Image 1 (tube, one colour):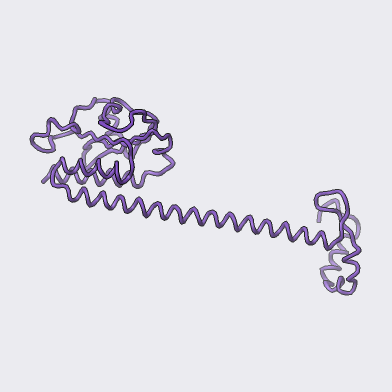
Image 2 (image 1 turned 60 degrees about the vertical axis):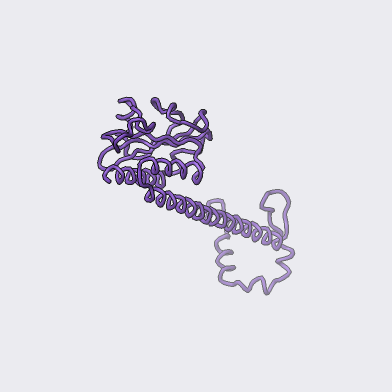
Length: 232
């Protein structure tokens, strides 16, 4: 009970709660009794007020159901998107496993990322002991600055950026050059092997809120592929 109740309110409420048949004995009262409109102003019959109350409740239920339907649709959409990405990662895995040498592995990596994942700009840089004899002219093994290597070797997860870092803007041999969203995926297999860089001119293509699960898996797959060739 609120403090602005009139004297006798509690007694009337207790009586009506204890005698629900009261309005059955006085059906005309439901028609003649008038109460304030919920939005203020004129008085309306009690029955009309009940209809308005039920309508408001139904509207709340409909809004709640609509919200649940939207959430369910989002979950289904996310599930379908994850299935699609999972299929692409699987195809990338098969392509990397099927590579017999450095050139085939790098070619498979570029091809799948550009064509299957639709990444506009892809760059790969590797360092450390020679991966194979005679690879000194391979672009992926071109020398990178000490600052870039220190940055990459400090990464424990994919790193997102709105602009190319260090000298990486010159690593992309094709694709758009006006990149405004990039992700740097570290390659590591017991030791640092290099960096995989994905870029796009779309500002939200690579952003932290998109998650890093599949990017991390791509980095691990690429690292294992490179390590397998090194140790072959």
